[in-house]
Image 1: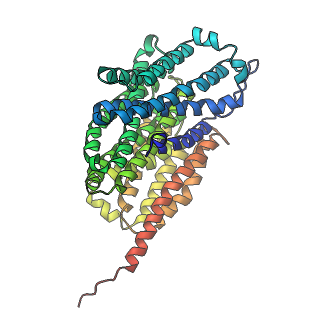
Image 2: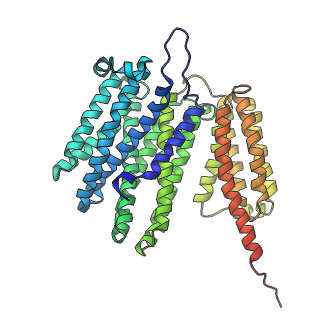
Image 3: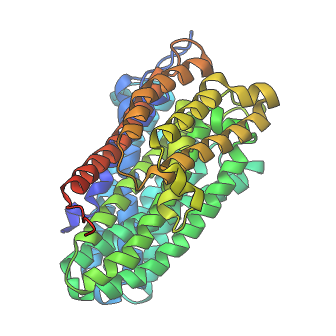
Length: 478
């Protein structure tokens, strides 16, 4: 894997970014009477350029920090990678600045050139972009430096990656200080974790003999990144979402739930990479490493894309409770969280084995609970929006876990097919119940496609297991 291909799976996150923007209605220009409208090309290209900038920043940070803490003997090669990706980062700041001016001034890209000087000098956004460009230029010039300067380069890259946090929901002012600092640490840790994994996997593929030691060193660094990402993510969510119902009833809160589940899967795959892939790498086999690392990088790209969607959505009104369960929240709580619990659990209660003998009944009970919570909204009607959201979330997670835990190792495929048939109907009715007829259609479509794809993988696995069991000879007692 060469420098230009470094972290290639990360770029698939652009698809997740487009889907997230579509769900949030962020791919069309809002029409406000009396005010100019930003060009459609700006609406599309600005978040995509943000994403590309963030990936280039992560790869630069990964190369510079990894050279110090994980691979001090390969500083020359990593310095070349850092130089190349910091140049890409610096180049992306030019269209990013033009598109930002176009968005703020609701003007075309050509007209943005005339007001760029005043924008860069007089606005917080402009000053942050200038400061980031200066820091990245310093990284470009000093990337090949040795000795103490290597630490300076790594620090500059981390600070430059975290600078956009100053622009998050209010910036560095008053009560927003905690949110800004938390977001800055969050972004820096994600950049280090994502870029570091891409660099380490590339080096492990190039030098299999030292891969085991390399991955062991990076695991400790990744663990600290996970702790920082988890803690700062929790703090940021608590500062921006004041009510439990906002996690279930708003798209912003639903995406926060989805990001939390993705973090759980990242931790799981990291552990599998350490416990299963490392022994195989020592024997010269890299299939498991490539598989787990590929899934990790794909998931990281999706999580970064969702972060950009959150920034463009903005948090909901802190005093306005959420209404019902969005299709995203319903899918995450009913399938995402239970699936994570099932794959991470080593033991299951004994009664699960008895329930496994009736997979269709387990699936039907699961669908009834999902319909009662998501479509009918019974917990909310009985207990109000806040307690109803908490009880509904617990019911969804419990019902999903019972179904997946009881039938996850079975051979029947009928229960999975039953859920696949019913899920699109539930999603449509859920979207209709949240905000009225015809609303949230993109959200319902996107979540339906994602869940159906996941269930299709489960169904294929079940069918293969049934065929395998049918071909196995049955021992007859004599």
